[in-house]
Length: 403
Ligand code: UDP
Ligand code: MN
Image (cartoon, rainbow, N blue to C red; front, side, top):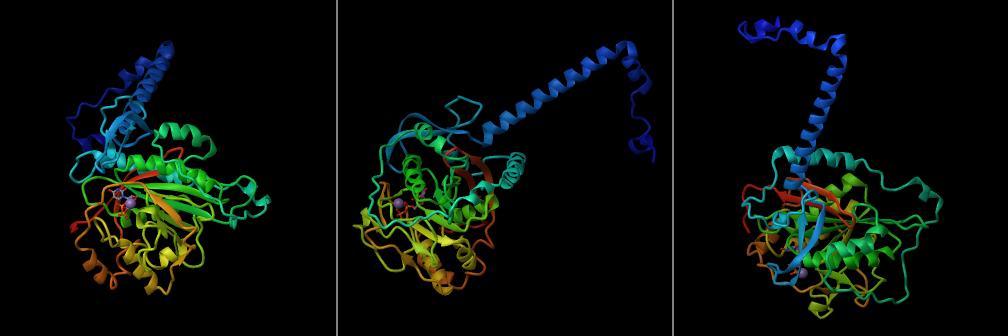
């Protein structure tokens, strides 16, 4: 088919001869300059859109701006996530935007982020040089208290201190031995910036002494729907495995800080509930089946129980639902002794409990197979490899949220 029959005969097609006459040998230099200018212009346009996307959707630094009180009532320093290419402090904090559905970026940006994520996914984190080192020994019987530093500091300052000791994305591996455990620490998160800074400041020094390879994953839920801790942990699990085949997952509240260095962050033969004795609960286990706060599961066990339920919006129930799943799969909750598995909890306001949590728990027993990592649908708005942690901004997709 001829071009003019496809587009219609009346289309004014450029006269090719006339155009070509501009590029005679006499005008060769001009033609070359023309092409260079075109490339230059193209570059400017691409950069412009690149920066624009960065401003809208992805972030490079958590900056200290000024004193503030957040919605949880904890006073401190405001951590504003500022876009990489802008010093404009007025750009809204991403997790506090009032978009009703929490949707922050366009599909185009989303797909760009997703494609860059795929590039990252192929990163090989463990170098072959490790093979020559002996296997690391993680256990320690010697009593050694860990004294958390709970002074609030800007993440910039913490980063100056810890950044050089870590690999991008908040990854650490022992230098002189081959780690036995490859642990993904998954932290569900929303609007607890002061806690995040204190958590990061303490958890890295604590874990670096444990002779394990680990990486911190912060999974932030966008605004709009009630917080879904379990869904954030499922997302953390699925996304972290795209980076490396971790053998162990530790799901960690952002406000809990360990107090004893014998509390090794690994996954034993049975799932392990780690936060046994918390100061706010008088350092006592509230009930036997508890599995909230900090808990460790092998990748295999987490898959076996289909992860957490995605149905718990608002506070409560999701950890007990996991406890039921473990029981159902004939797994047992193991624990370190009460004098080792000690934590302090940073202060925060009590979240509004989900009134449907008991009803969900009863129904949940029949839904293990269809509600979990095999059924979760979510949007990932951003992925960032900050120096001290890998950060995901996500939202679970559900048509009807009943909290
Ligand atoms: N969380 C959060 N933002 C919220 C609610 C919860 O980041 O608005 C996360 C955070 O990691 C927190 C965990 O979910 O530590 C458990 O929530 P919370 O601390 O309110 O529960 P509780 O202390 O009552 O167990
Ligand atoms: Mn808490």
